[in-house]
Amino acid sequence: MTKEGLQKLYEKLKDDANNIIKKAESKPRVLVGTATCGVAAGALKIRDNFLQEIKSKSLDVDVVEVGCMGHCYAEPLAVIDKPGYPPVCYGYLDDGLVHRLVEDFLGGDDPSYEYALAALERNDVFPTFEDFPRGVYEQKLILENCGFIDARSIESYISRDGYSALVKALNESPEWVLDEIKKANLRGRGGAGFPAGIKWEACIKAGGNEKYVICNADEGDPGAFMDRSVLESDPHLVIEGMILCAFAIGAEKGYLYIRAEYPRAVSHVEDAIRQARDKGLLGSSILGSGFSFDLEVFQGSGAFVCGEATALVNSMEGKMGMPESRPPRLASHGYRGKPTVLNNVKTFAYVPMIISRGADWFKEIGTAESPGTAVFSLVGKVNNTGLVEVPMGTTLRQLIYDVGDGLPNNREFKAVQIGGPSGGCLPEKSLDVPIDFDSLHDAGAIMGSGGLVVMDQDDCMVSVSRYFLEFTQHESCGKCTFCRIGTKHLLDILTDITKGEGDSDTLQRLEELAEDVRDGSLCNLGKTAPNPILTTLRYFRDEYKAHIEEGRCPALVCRDLILYFIEPPKCSKLCNVCVGSCPTEAIFTREDGLKEIDQEKCVKCDNCLKACPTEYNAVVKLSPPVLPPEKEKKTK
Image 1 (cartoon, rainbow, N blue to C red):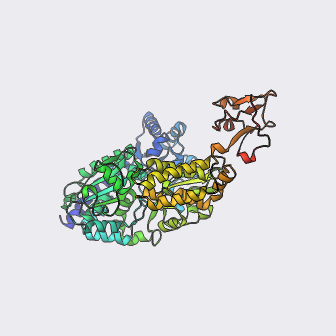
Image 2 (cartoon, rainbow, N blue to C red):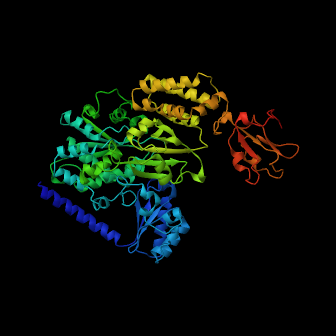
């Protein structure tokens, strides 16, 4: 087909899409965030409430399910888009607020701006997302459509110039597409930051007529939900990126490897693939161009190690999900032994915009060595948890305090874990480190897939290291000795330290073993598993020493090193709340009517501390070295 014919065919698709979307947007709409984060907070009930309220008042209003808007801390969320008014976002929705919004705004002319999410955040009246304080720092590229289009409607994507990059590429050449990706210096967003263009070029040079494109959506990091949210919110963006990659390397078949624990992502992607086929954007001779490529979903079983490229391919081939030594690399010897390009969800998501807007445009964003943006799931001890996208080079301080609005209750910042369970824990002095692949590596952390966990003064860094290592040790496939046995020994040492056990040589053994596991493991799961240990030893060594040398946990977290007791002067004889809260009947009433804790029965569940009325605050939690002088156990 000629260039003119391709362009006309696409323009027909876009005109049809625009007509459908224009008709939908000509009347009021309620966009309800129903990504997994919203569903978990009750968004489906809110959707049903809107439908019932609208029906009861006989209003002509559409209720549309959209993806993640990024403001996960305020779920359930909805945007009301009514002609004549700017789109207004409302958070913390409940039955009462839904009733009021339908009654006063959809059925009347009162937008109730005082309940708009931005108004609640700054005690001001400005309803649009662009006016949010975090908007100064965010730059949404991958997340541009998320929360604003119906992820199950291909027309919503096409009406926003979706698949125009594919048409542009088909009118150019595979070589041109590869050159643009190389020139853009697009680095893989799966964690390693390897240039995508170089990987694609290696696959081309491997030769052969059979090649594959695989999208790695096996997102298994605790606290990470970036890839899932993109697939749930804007699946066609990733699909278009994969088609462009296939065109560049000459592949006819591709797979999206999505873990089965992501049912909404799987469902939305499968719907998107069917719609793309129906429009002639997937399958035989795409848009009549003669270029053929098709996709299907492969559901992973949830093994964390299958996020590693070679382990992922092994699992697709029906083998054990274990990594292989490299070389040969997947680019030359991948799925079914054929040249394969495997990239992350976010990497493919950048491709259409680079082809549409140009490599030079992309390189103007971010830093010289790490162009583009970084997408993070911001979780932990931070006010505004959620999904954020900022230009590379933004500092951790800006991300946590300006985008995330700092820590709740003015708590003291302690550390941030960046890069998932294999990332590093960085202290307050590292908050001004720019977010890019190289700067984070120099600080001892990694970019990883984009998980970012904020911790405050109440977090114990030894316990944190143990938590993440327990995860990676459990997920180790067991193939190589350093990872299988080394991580187990590391976990045992950390467990001993949390119990106050160890000697003067413990930290040296811990550090040396961590370095050995890092240097000797086969794949990146083992190589990066010791990162939490190495960074916490680097930045929080005194906390380790307090556990070993003083037998105390400064953060009052490690159960074996803390003790609960009741201060007699504060205890009320008339109050028995703590007694009822104790699951082991460790709290008893003394002869003088006051309460006391039997330390042998106490399991340190924290119930008594939480239950004690604030007007008394009689229950105290301390570490042994700072206990009151009277240590002799009293019995009932």
